[in-house]
Length: 283
Image (cartoon, rainbow, N blue to C red; front, side, top):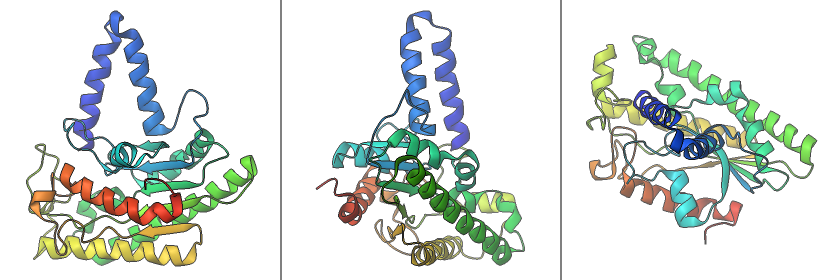
């Protein structure tokens, strides 16, 4: 989906660049994009809550009726975020780009919590590498995810305390709910998490739902382990919100890995309730 998203965004920005009467609007759109996707804002935008995430928290271009977790929390639960959310974002990219520091810079001294929606794209990237070697490749990727999350937490908290003082940030990460590998792609060629993609790259699995649900359970278990080791890291389980194992129900799904608007409404309701004791926002 990220290829379609970038193409659509490029088309919009190209049109605006070549339209003098839209110059101010283009500048506003560009500034909003940079602030929301890379936490590069025009000056400090103080906020108690940051967010760094992938397409589960980003807007889905072409689907204005689908509000993912970030807009749901903003519009229905009164969250005011500073953050970096972009479809297709990997945890590896976030760490490489130092986005945790950008978010802390923009949030300021009052930032208490950063919500994370990351890891799914790190697992799904380059599916062909799994062929004939699923267990080893998955273990390697999970080890990298664990190392990157710990690096983000340790360096982020050290940076926040050095710059602003006060207590460490609390880092809240949600696990994903079960995908549905039998859904059709919402956009042709954008079939991440789908059986059609497994077949296309030659990753033959006897039961696609059993494969994806087991992988998702292992990822959630990894997050539980990290939460036990890192006192500033808080894991929230969102499984079984959209119908349960082995795959989420089709009526709650947009495609194989993304919920539709009803699905994200259910996910946001559950997530907001579970994190309220930490954020004290929304109720």
